[in-house]
Length: 356
Image (cartoon, rainbow, N blue to C red):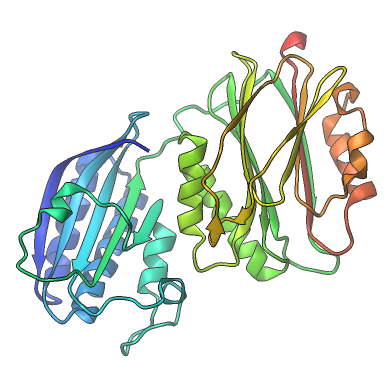
């Protein structure tokens, strides 16, 4: 994702007394950018945790940076970087779990940063030039953490009247928690983002992973699908991980873009043919291949189906494009083809522009 950064502010962190000053300046900066009271409170917590991490884990002083960040789609947000010169974090995935700390603390700081950030990373491979050019006089950075929060990106509220939808989901039989989730977000009168998410395994831990992925998708639905998948990938580190299928449907251009990681299956039904949408191997949050976007025609009366691997493949003989009530169809398919050994979810979307 191409980003531009400006309005960079740098703060030298020497001890815990710097927490309050940095927090006030970060909140004031975010308020100038237009963040609401809820997100200002989250910026305050993020700043406190990031500064505290420098103080508690560094053998010397560190630095805290804030700046304005803007994406190629003109989304605006705040970016925060903390840089310390301690011994570093040997196991990042373990460190972001609550209760894990090498010092006498609650061990929830990194987990809180991760949960409150729209995007988050520890020791990323790339970082902005103002970090690289910092003249701190230190020989080696111990830990570099960044957190990014976007202003609300959902600028349009309504439905895409050119689409008809049906969805059904149920947990592993006997389980309280569903490890599957699905997402439908209408981005404009002609554009809709959908997703099916399958947390690895089943039960509460799978549910937590899929719910976190859903929150990240809903938080930034306007991002390019490749960037959105990468963002979710970073957010799910330290969780069970998930398999995810993302699709963006444009009923003005009659196109669908699809990107899948893991065993989420997708298929487009047309009047006289079907087309499989291929997902790449991997687990989002653990190890995944570089996402590859697939773009296909999605004209009037075409239907797109996404489902988790808890749904057996026998349903594919159903003539989806001819079904009148997609919600009823989704429920019947789930009842007939869901495996008894897994959570199961199916989402059906039809281009109904001809009927409008």
